[in-house]
Image 1: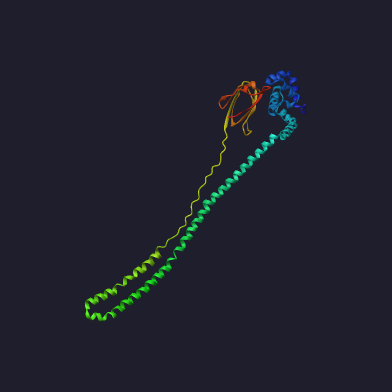
Image 2: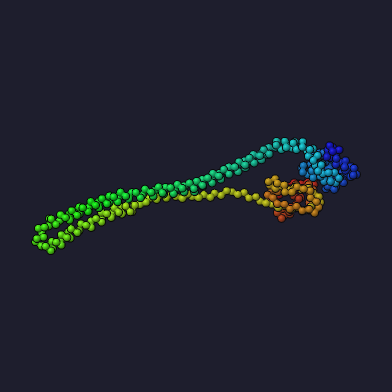
Length: 322
């Protein structure tokens, strides 16, 4: 019957073929107690749901039933058991601690992202906006320096003009005062008068030159802004270590390998002569359904002795770290 339990369907198919429990167990490299648990629907006696499905699929193929149909029925039978296990898992205090750790890691990542964006904004402000402000300050300081020289030019011109008439007036009055002297000595007096009249003229240059110099040589004040220090913070980079696992098999064996992130690198039934060669982030968690069917195990090129790990019902689980 299709609606019968999976274990009962397998049992009927086995009895129809005239096979015993020991025959099935020997072909599947399992203990007879595992076969009995499957036929009696005692799913809790098998630790992993993954192994249970592998055993049922192999059992169905051996007795001539459709494995996919039986696995679909098995999923419906396992649903109440999954709900119960999930409830027990949620009630476990270790699960709550792990959940809090994940939340803290998520908050830390968000905080690092916010700090990185803020730092990028600060650097952009220093390089772009402050450079524009510095150039504008230099232009404003240079512009007022040009008009200041014009009043000096006007003052210097008026001072020069005022001095020139005074000098000329003194030169015109000098011959009137010295007329009686000319009668006594004509030649020497004429030379002295011409010399006295010509001497005041060079006085224009010392008055005009300071004004011209003040008009031309005006100091220009340039404000120099100190260049901001460039900060190049380095964020920590997390680098995961990759581990390699190699396995060979001498008989049929179900094996599962998961990496540190929970990704399943392999989860399948291996046949005689098969090889498994996988790599992933360490540590690697390994589950072997039939220890005596494993030919060799090498981790990072080094042999691994399965005798160092606990074996129950020809099954073992262990973790390999770097």
